[in-house]
Image (cartoon, rainbow, N blue to C red; front, side):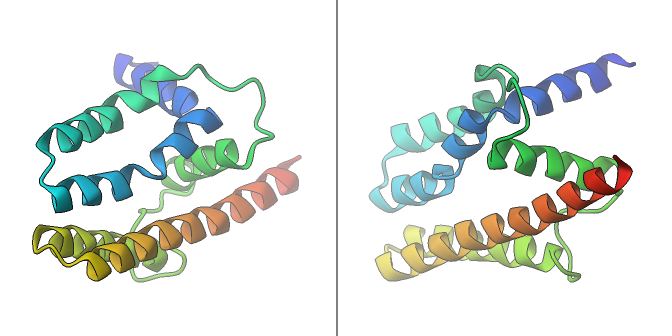
Length: 147
């Protein structure tokens, strides 16, 4: 196993701790809020949090937690299924639309349009969680089929 693969595996394993996954969910909203308020310290701290979050938590003891399976499903989707995370096919269209929603939320926050910032943020998080929900179902089904 190459150094790159070992580092990648370690990061994914640590990020699969449900504390890591769930604590990242509000990160987009905090970024939008920081931009809206022009709070550059909060914006910087949130970006640092995004980078260090996957290494802060130890790997989970089991994969019973939904968020653990969501992270493992995302890795499975990318590596074993060789699928992208955004696209026009289902379920990737959910992730793509969520990314567009987040871009709109950032734009609205930069223009100080609170309703647009909130709507874009809620759409982004909702679509990301929907995408993960679909991946977890497929991941669980693939694991049950191979067992």
